[in-house]
Figure 1 (cartoon, rainbow, N blue to C red):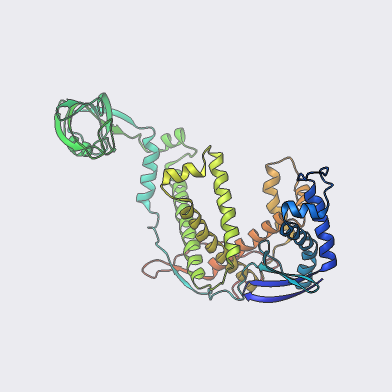
Figure 2 (cartoon, rainbow, N blue to C red; figure 1 turned 90 degrees about the horizontal axis):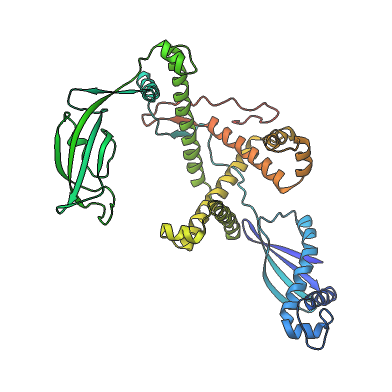
Length: 453
């Protein structure tokens, strides 16, 4: 079998194969016999109709195409081995021509995009929207939130203020017609909490027990046959004002109601938790901003077939998640007011960005000499083994050489490449002050060598 390879674009190749007449004729006979088993031809038992009769029923083109498909399935592994090409998606037949010795078949082959060198990233400054440092005030607010779970309400003889609860009787009407809702008797309302109508907190703040408040306000939501925004008349009788009393913050209370023995220990742990959350938020922000900036500098002529295939996988995953939720794509489209083209267009955009980032990280990994050892793969399988009855060794044996193993290896490689990027750049706030993200040191030299060389 002879073939030629020509370049269509950076990541597309056209392979032209010659399928000689003898082999093509034999393949057509095999295709006809296979098709004969699935069709009925008058005068012949199923599967026994001659080739010419099969061609008359299904068309000669169908027989020819099936034969070419069979021949390509047999020959393409040799083509990939001979050319070193690794198609990202299944090749597409781009043309068939009759020639003297048989037929020539053009195949359009799409390859995974690769990046020769990554954009300059070492020493790059990346500006982040940095939240405030965690201080005593933030720690105190968090501790108070925990204390509020154990708060008690005490009736007080004073005007109500922010943070108080008021026991109220509430009635409403519209155009003189009493409404069933909003209405309540003996309802304990916390000042500041959003109510069905606007302005309830503002109208009640400063009132004492026994006060009667009447006002008009628009509804925040539809109620019965009244639309959102409809102005209703509201009457509220304040029965009691109750103050929220937090437990004393002392070592005895901390020891009784937390996992710590002292207030100091509790505050120290709260600080660590809040500081860790702030740090992870900054790291996550850096990952997003850095990848977005670098991806914009990457110029890749990504084959449309690769984008389409990636988007379709995303769409099928999306459909599967809807199925798990006992829903469907049709119901989602109706609920969101979108059409299928708009939704799939979103997946196309995400697929393009994902491919660009993948090529970028692969380039960084190659540039810095990052490697994935067998031990790293076994560590990744450990998480799978912990959820199943299989051992790490049996999983490794089962996955050896599979697409899943390659996927795991790729995930590890790209994760390390991203870590390399983050350690190589300088994160600053809006004022240009450097932010210490306290990133872990790089992996051992035998795994990642000179990552920021």
